[in-house]
Amino acid sequence: MIFMHGQCVHADSMPTTADMITTTDNYDLTPRNTFAMKVKCGVFMEYTVADDIPFILSSIREGIEHMHIGAGSNILFTSDYPGVVMHSAIKGFEIISESPRELIVRAGAGEVMDDFIRWACDHELWGIENLSGIPGEVGASAVQNVGAYGVEACDTIVAVHAYDSVEREFVTIPVEDCDYGYRDSLFKQPDFKGRYIIHAVDYRLSPIPNPQISYPALKNMFKDCDLCSLTPNDIRKAVINIRDSKLPNPIDAPSAGSFFKNPVVSEKIFSDICNREPDVTVPHYEVKEGYKIPAAWLIDRCGWKGRKEGNAAVWHLQPLVIVNPDRKATPKDIIDLENRIICSVRERFGITLHPEVEHI
Ligand SMILES: Cc1cc2nc3c(=O)[nH]c(=O)nc-3n(C[C@H](O)[C@H](O)[C@H](O)COP(=O)(O)OP(=O)(O)OC[C@H]3O[C@@H](n4cnc5c(N)ncnc54)[C@H](O)[C@@H]3O)c2cc1C
Image (cartoon, rainbow, N blue to C red; front, side):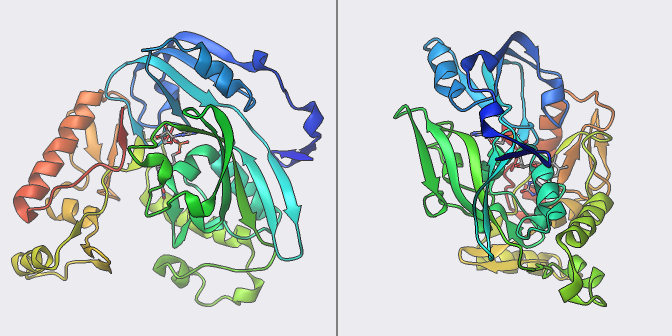
């Protein structure tokens, strides 16, 4: 059985042939990137079954560049893309195995991640409710190792199903081999980038209640609640409320979410910063490599919160987010603002920020 948006569909009624590929030349990518950059690609190819992937790749002439996108919510197109942009429209969820303690659910790479999460919550299945509201698709959730409110995708991913474009074969990569780290994975590493085209991801969900509310805002919201009575939908609603209070909705203020990575600095640099900012406690987390400082705090201290430069702006509620407030920003507007932020943080703190958003 395959579940599509909560309905049951028999697997044999799913499309199975390569004729489900849609090809469009000179394609407008504006609705395909949450920054709403007005850019085009040479060819856009959307497919609905995994078997289409090798067919599409073999149809791309040598020397023509190609890339895969999801919902374009972690991408900044810096100009038109001359090559082929692929997109998966593989939808549906399939229960692969079921026991009293857990279900393994396979979700199609082109499924909207939040639709999958809503489906899980509506079926009282635990594991991914804290990821509610993160834009994007299931395939990219495994590339990005999306995370929020104390939970990461890799906590519940069991395996990733992909087409290996180098070996030209379908592969199943168990979670242990995905090399997951903070917003990082095998699929992002330079040697493997673009090699695997993901067509489905297996997630482990559980009917046994397991609310993850260690994140301070969540803990506070549920401090007077009987934790045993919570449902995944209670957590989902709380998470969405917190997100809505801080993050711009891509429809109202296009963005790609957190624009910069949180820098990790040595003990010496950290203590220099503390000495230079004696009026405040510098927020930080100790990590293996040193001290991680929230990029949002550094940007805020440089006075960027809410500032608009040309047609790009820093979100007034969360300085880590660059927005395209009137949908008039060009890639250059975003990059100019990005560079000005990087320069001012470097001048004040001696730290170079690096973008989290992928520049294409
Ligand atoms: C308002 C806002 C809030 C956000 N909040 C969060 C958050 O809380 N936590 C978080 O982790 N992220 C967050 N993000 C970032 C973003 O939502 C995630 O990175 C998401 O996983 C990107 O999904 P996507 O489908 O849009 O992928 P895209 O941005 O289209 O692509 C991301 C990468 O995945 C690759 N890719 C996409 N699909 C496939 C595929 N099928 N096979 C192989 N490679 C593929 C692309 O080539 C690209 O390298 C936020 C973004 C926005 C706009």
